[in-house]
Amino acid sequence: MSFEFRNLKRLGNSVSVSISPDENGYLGRECPEESCEGYFKIKPGTGLTGQDLPCICPYCGHKGPHNSFWTKAQVEYLHSLALRQVSDAIHKDLKQLEFDHKPRGAFGIGLSLKVKSGAPVPIRHYVEKELETHVTCDQCTLEYAVYGVFAYCPDCGAHNSLQILQKNLDLALKQLSLADTVTERDLKEHLTGDALENCVSTFDGFAREVCRIRAAKSTDPSQCESLSFQNLPRAAIRMQKLFGIDLASCVPPAEWQAAHIGFMRRHLLAHRAGVVDQQYLGETGEPPAHLGRKLVVSAAEVRTLAGVVLQIARHFISKLPAPNKSKALP
Ligand SMILES: [Zn+2]
Ligand SMILES: [Zn+2]
Image (cartoon, rainbow, N blue to C red):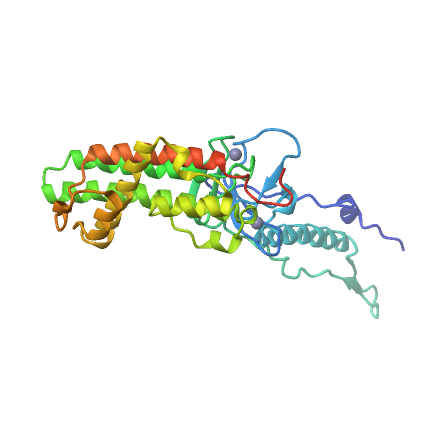
């Protein structure tokens, strides 16, 4: 007796299974680099178009073909789908072997073969994870989502540091608009002071990140892990030492000084309840009579500061070397 596994043969040498994006249109990805394995999501249909485009890890910059970025959960799901197809085909083929010969005559012997159905191979369903920051790349329009805030675009590789800074500065300006609508004086002052603090802290976060991803290009990579940009002249000295660039020359001297004063005012708001101290007078050159007075922050100075911060940031990036992301990136 010969038997053909027709259903199994029909599957051929490969089994075709596919992955669909989640309900918001995002597809999970996982960096194949052992030291990273970072999880992120991209929205297929946005970003660059073309055949066989590579994928770039937003965290470490590793670059490789898209089919090397499957998440572990997706791989398990695909394996289970493939196994199910194979086991179903084998089951169908074996079913054809069934027979049932009834006993004949008074002492006849009946023979039968019944293929019993076992439990089907379980499908390992999965759900894509929720992530913290959603970004639309301002270079290639790819929509992607990451843990944390800063990232390389998985399509074009552009780093989003400047984009995040701009977004946060816009939020600070919105705080000012909100302060405009408030009549209660304390709340108005609080919102305005908060907007000033946010301009400084967002620049600090931005500048730390742009140095961190370029650490290997600096004279002392370990220092790039613990920088602070809350005091501009001190930061300028460190940038000169680490990258050989003149941070202060990013803007004209008057604007640099205005930004320095703005940053010192943030220090008072954050650490001295907004009361002028000797260090502030020493840093800004304001008259001694201001000692012990409470700062009054105006919306106009915050708007100016936001503009100067953005200018410094743009020039800062243009002076720095390219990020040392990936060995694999162009
Ligand atoms: Zn990675
Ligand atoms: Zn992009």
